[in-house]
Amino acid sequence: MSKISLIIRREYTTRVMKKSFIILTFLSPLLFAGMITIPLWLSGLKGLSEKHVYVIDRTNQYRQVLKSNESYKFEFIDDQIDNVRTKKTTGDKEFTAVLLIDDDLSKNPKGATIYSQEQIGVDLKNYITGVLNKYVEQKKLEEYNIPEINQMIEKSHSDIKISSIKWDKNGKEVASSAELALVIGMISAFIIYMFIVIYGAQVMSGVIQEKTSRIVEVIISSVKPYELMMGKIIGIALVGLTQFFMWIALTAILSVSVGAILGPHIDVNSLHQNASQMNIGMPGIESTTTESSVSYIFNMLDGLNLVKTLLFFLVYFLGGYLLYASLFAAVGSAVDNETDTQQFSFPLTLPIIFAIYAALYSVQNPHGPLAMWCSMIPFTSPVVMMVRLPYGVPTWQIVLSLSILAASFIGTTWMAAKIYRTGILMYGKKVTWKELWKWLNY
Image (tube, rainbow, N blue to C red):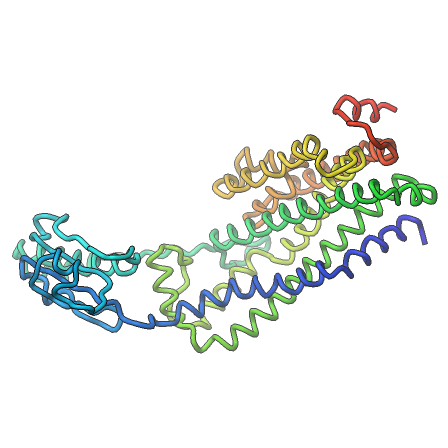
């Protein structure tokens, strides 16, 4: 077995067997599954108690408009707002808010005010506003005295839903969704960004710890500095991939299990209605049945070619990680403690931070010049290319991007190896950028 393989196995086993790795690996899927299922479950729960609202209507026009239901109870009273505030009229009876209507809302839209002892929720305010707006609109329409005007307006309403169909290479039609492509692209880009930063920093921290503990002096007597650096980088990469795949598997299992338990309590039609009100629903997904919505989503996923997306995710993850990890290893070898890493690590993190901003703008125009060039630059391509892939990228651009990334990794590894070879056994000296340049020219 080669020396690099031994180092890879050592780095992998020591990190995988740590309690922090085991706890994080099994705890994170619980959080992911909870973030998916708990909001769905909570959305189906009704309020534990109705909200009590007193209404002081000076116009006597809205008694038949504001009607109580299972969520809100409206009680009309004839008193001054100051008396209600001091509870002289209501006694010790608790109330959520007081609605004061002191003018005709069709003539004065600002004629209503809500008073409360605590900040009211958006749902109550929106409900009252919606009911009053609907009544005032109806009243204004009746003033035109046009027969059957409500039927005319209702017939004039349009609910256009444009579905998108994509042709594959064989001319077959498959359903597609720009919204779904956006979600998958951004999630993939963010995961790559997160893993590069986290595990790249682990490489740097591991090098510093071995250097400060002087154990590296023993290791270097048996292996070359380049072999030690590559073994550490590849070993930590395998740790990251192991954790990633375990997260996917455990999250899927937990989501299905919790979904099966909470499924009967989730009102799909209510969720669809809420999503439509917030304008976040996906075009083409009707609120008829759960099966039809799920079938439609799976058809869109098939059109996005998830296998291809996952394959390129692994390739760009490894390419981006190896590129940055080699530089982080060089930084770790050049300093004596983690405090001194700021001046060197900050310039390394700037491109990856810029890549996130470029990805956010690239989703608006995935084939524009910003997206295209950032998907070619090796320091930003792992993140930006993942945003573009669900929208379809020409093969020549993918090949060119991967070629540049591979060449850049070779170049940065060569540079990092020269710095690592010199800095790994150097102690007690403040290293500058000028000093690093000298090491590269040795």
